[in-house]
Image 1 (cartoon, one colour):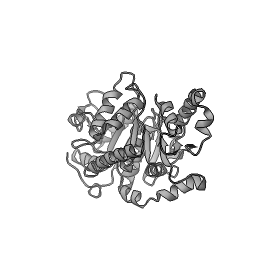
Image 2 (image 1 turned 45 degrees about the horizontal axis):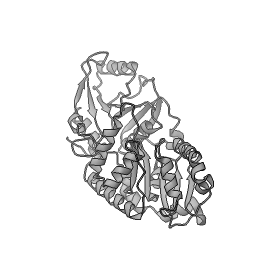
Image 3 (image 1 turned 90 degrees about the horizontal axis):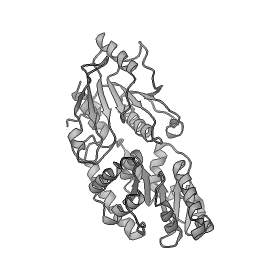
Image 4 (image 1 turned 90 degrees about the vertical axis):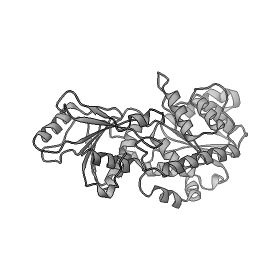
Length: 379
């Protein structure tokens, strides 16, 4: 797949389309892409049906990005589209495509049309990445969409990784961040764990493990929304078994911090500050890989069970040790039994695995570099 450094690409007009379906994951990925495009000197219009999450995800916006309402289209005096990005299977409104086609008929260059797909480590991804999809009907009949698959290995579209990320991480002061969160009340020798999840079947088992004294004292930082609600429900369900007071009132063994919603750069810092990160969906998984700390992925559950093979493919790529593989399967409800006890030795083993995977990723071009090169080759 040809690539082209971003400084060789002229400032195109990108139109990125996003429907917010799953708990901010779609808008999170699209905002990261838009931000990195803008930082590379590109112009971006982000068309979204629900931009409310950007109020906390990106409160300051970003130079070079205009957030537009889904269903509208550019005025006649605005720039024509150079690249259309249809994210995660959302379909661009027919009126927008008709307006693009009218401009092409009037002499504008035909835009490159990208179908940005979901992230997967499955073996079929390299075979489908970059394939054409002819448009047979409608005002854009005769045009071509191009399948673009993010991925973990060669012959895929890569992963989003902004310039300077590793330098920012290197300069991060973990001790200072922890002191800001808990002050002197929270001992630095505690293990710090972030929890971003849906409703994992083994959450109660995990809370009991943390509270039981089987491991080092734990500071559990719980993200807002479904994760905090899931913890509340799990604590209620097991209160009769081990006592709610023991779970919530014993900061020497388990201290639970409910976190506020935070912008994307601040979420990165949360991941960097922790000894273990529970993540979910797509965006936070990628950010946890860059963080290089042990991680557990709560993959989005699908009714047809497709998430099982998708998770196994990721664990195969990760070269996950048996304990990490088993933890993932129990955490995601794909295997029965108890979670393995996560002690210091297990965390060290998992961390070594994740950092080795990160090194493999750093040796590859990031998604933006590849996408710019791909679009240049199609113009």
